[in-house]
Image 1 (cartoon, rainbow, N blue to C red):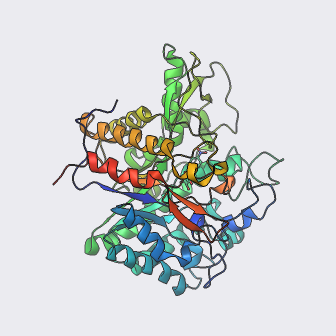
Image 2 (tube, rainbow, N blue to C red; image 1 turned 90 degrees about the horizontal axis):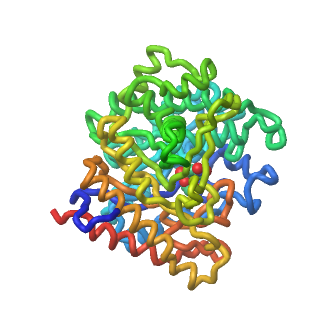
Length: 483
Ligand code: PNW
C-alpha cells in the first residue's frame, strides 16, 4: 500500500546501476586481459543469442554520453563496476598493473564529479580474470583468491583515494556461487549436470565458493578500514541479492517456515556471518559438513564487515514446503518448491521477459522490514531494482520507448520503499535502478532488456531514453523531503 504521507530523507541518494562486462565492450583494448565471461560466451549454447560482451554498449568509448545521460535523468548517483582484468590483466598480486585500464575509470569518476553525480564502485561484478581461473581454480582456491582480491582492492583504493566514498566489494555472491558452480548457467559454468559441463560438483563447490567470497570481502574491508577510511572517510559493504518469499498456503505452518528458510538460504547465507558471526541454523542442519566452517581468524574478518547493507531486489515467489522428503545433495534453496502461483491459483505478479521475475512491490517492503529486524536496522543502500518487459525486444521502437510497465514498476517499488522508511522505520538511504541502459543480460544475451534507456545495438549503440528514464526522477521528486 502506497500512502500519500510516506517520504524519503532529503539526503537520499538515488541513481542508476550498471556493470563492467555488461556495458563496456572494448574487451581487447588498451591491455585488458580476458575474464571468465569472455571464455564462457565462446562456449556454444551458453548465451541465448550466441552473443558476448565484446561490444555491448561500447561504454569504454562513451564516458561523455553516459554521464550526459545520467545528468539528463537527474541522477544523483551512479553505481558501476570495475573490470579487474582491465586493471590487472592477469589478476594476481605479482602480475603487472595496467594503468590504461585504471585511467578509464579515473576519467569516468572525474566526469561524474564534474556533473555533480556521486560514484559508487563495485569492485567485483562477476568478471573474474580468466588467468586466475586457469592458474588456480579462481574462487575455489581460498588462500590464493583472498590474497589476490585483497591486492586488487588495495590497488583500486590507492588509485581512487579520496575520490570515491561508496564501495561495494562483491555483487551478488549467491549468483557467483549457485549459478556459477551449481546450476552452471553463469561462468565458469561448473555443475554436477554432465549434460552442461564435464566438470563441477554442485553439492559442495557452491558452498566453498560462497565461503571464500565472504572471507575475501572481509579481508578487503579490513584493508579499507585500516589503510584508507581514517584518512578519506567513506563506507564499504557487500551487495546481496534476494527475493521476497510468500507461503504457498498461508494456513500451512510448514509453508511459512519454508518461506523463511528460502530467504535464509539466499540472503542469510552471507548476511548472518556478517551480522551474527555464523551460518544460519537451517543451512547447517541441511548441509552438514558440506558447509565450510569459519576458523576464528576468518570469522573475525567477516563479522561486522558491513558499513551498509547493499540490497539487490527484483521480485517475489510463493514457497511450498516438501514435508518428509530428504533434500537432494545439489539442493541450494532449502528443500522447497519455488512457485509463481499460490494454492488459490493467484500469480505473485505480472509476467515479464525474465522467467524468474514477477514484480510484487509489497514484497520489497516486507523484505526491507525482515532484513532490518534480523540485522538490527542497518543502513541499507538498494544497489539494484528494476524489471524486464515481456516482449520488449520485439516491439516497434515507438512502443518500446513508451515503457509504461517499467514506469509502473518503479512507482510501485519506490513507493513501497518510502512506506518501509516512513512506516516501518527501515533505514534505507539510497536506491540505484537497474539499469541505466539496456545491456548484455548474461546468459540471456541482448534479448532481454532492463534499461531505462534503449540501446540500438545494430546502429552504433545509439542511446534513446525510454519513458521510465524520466519517470524515476519525478517519483523521487515526490517522495524526497525538501531540506
Ligand atoms: C542481477 N536470478 O542478476 C545482476 O546483478 C545484474 O547484473 C543483472 O543484469 C540483473 O540482476 C538482471 O538480471 C540476477 O536468476 C540475475 O534469480 C539472475 C537472477 C538474480 C539476479
